[in-house]
Image (cartoon, rainbow, N blue to C red; front, side, top):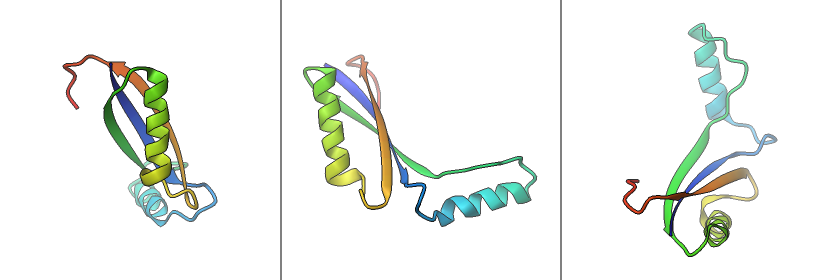
Length: 88
């Protein structure tokens, strides 16, 4: 079966995020009513696995081994089944 994972990786709330602060300030300077902003990376990964549970285990392993720095990042992910002919 084919699965699509959507992984969001961002700084933990207790880490200073200068990129988010700069963007928020600029949006406020442009008169947008922004009250909060966090910059996150989003990964879309396609997998061929036997089950959704297997895909979730693999995605969690990808996060812990490469995509996420556990000292500064938080992450969450979703895995869903997709048609074999789905585009990335």
